[in-house]
Length: 300
Image (cartoon, rainbow, N blue to C red; front, top):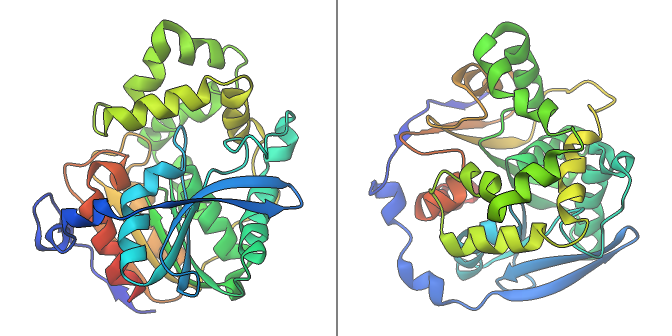
């Protein structure tokens, strides 16, 4: 296994400065992806015949989490597509939590790739999108050219950390708490104060407002929380052979260092670990230039 030693990335670093602000001027397309499960809304950029990249958002976000990365990848000739995932797209919002299992979520990834004619593609994920990306690499390694995950450790590494590290058990308690049926009310009351606090004032207020608006729609927040209520994956997590980059930030409140450093043991292919200092859980939005530069480096 080829392993790249972790290096801290900070704001203003050479990695971050590789992407120029002019890329924000690029037009991002909005499209619909038709699958048997329903219609996924998505943002996209780049030539339709470009090398395909699918980017999966986390909770409580949406496709626009990847706005900067989609624009940058598109400008560099990739076909970058970021969908609003199951429950976030109104056209794919089943009511039962049993329809939000990892099997369903991974199936959506493959269905969206198939709908766009992608036999192989690069997969990127953050937070819950990162978990889905790991499981897609486990279950469908033949479909992926590369894997890039921000924040979320390999599920096997997280399981080890939950077993051995008291701090990680405390960090992950929210995953159980949010299964309670009072969670929607608590998150949305007082102008969604609890949801707003999650972002730690680290990302663009306009994005936070849009996330709150989306999740305030009837049934939307319950659908997003069903990802937590669906229960654990039925199978055991295997090691990943796909070329992988894992990016973890030192101020992440959800995932600690034990799971982050354990992740390498679950990757048998070329593996790159990037440690970002003084950055919160919301890496793609808090330091978008650095995140985009890391992606470009890994994909090329």
